[in-house]
Amino acid sequence: MGKQRILSGVQPTGNYHLGNYLGAIRNWVEAQSEYDNFFCVVDLHAITVPHNPAELAANTYTLAALYLACGLDLEYSTIFVQSHIPAHSELTWLFNCITPMNWLTDMIQFKEKSERQGENVSVGLLDYPVLMAADILLYKADKVPVGEDQKQHLELTRDIVNRFNHQFAKPENPVLKLPDPLIRKEGARVMSLVDGTKKMSKSDPSELSRINLLDPPDAIAKKIKKCKTDLVRGLTFDDPERPECNNLLTLYMLLAGKTKEEVAVECQDMGWGQFKPLLTETTINALKPIQEKYQQVMDDKGYLESVLRDGREKAQAIANQTLTQVKAAMGYSLP
Image (cartoon, rainbow, N blue to C red; front, side, top):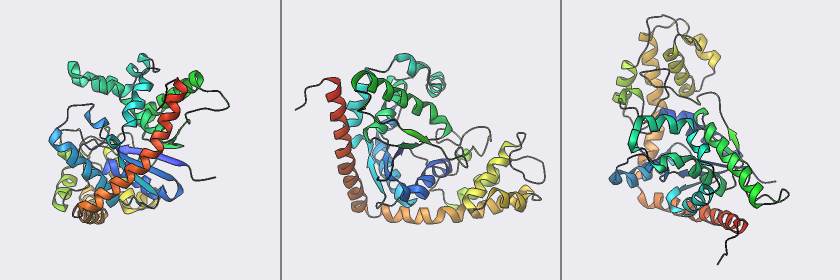
């Protein structure tokens, strides 16, 4: 048997931060040799909320370059842009027509985001999980790396698979493959620097809430110096009364490549005045090779365009085959 296939992606909306890296991209890199990987820049998802058209293409190239800078290896991974494959949009429409409305209105993320946007909420935001299902199922992914906040969307993807196969395929010959979540516990949720109870997010209006992958050293130092802490001396993991302490220790553990036990012993007697410089130095050193590689890739646009062109060709061949199978099962006449 061949390797199991992985599919995942990140939106090209700027401000790629440690949460994106430690919660997703670094995990992809560490495990990539074990799988057949497809990683996309999900630019169709990026317009489910108001966006700046002048920045969309630039952010797409930035994210693709960061994929490479963070260590994705083309020997193991295919990198492509979602909108370059028309099958994503077409399969979404086909799935829309078999997906009950209440499946979508029950999504927790839709409820939260629609409350914030009010009357400006788009059909695209409601339909986001169906597009996500199309992304995954086009490539017949075995596993999907997801954070806890995306588990509900993957469950909906599995519901769509079961509904489609029940309606349009025979039990012994299913058309769509049922994907499983791949969740890494450590670092799966990197929290805000200003509120340890909230996830680090690019949509947070405060730049101080996150460390971006391309932040220069002085910006990193400033953000860590200003990040929220407490008055307790001695740093410990997993104290529910000290969420910021747990978050900053976790960041240090992941960026330094140490175990939880090692960090617990090292930091148990530290104060914040001693720990913050340590975290600053560790963060700067961890991000330096990524930033250097990113600049190399961005300085060679021809190389980056060739990576995305090759990725599109490989991804499109698989996606179109799946789309054809779905349309045939649904009764369409095919050219």
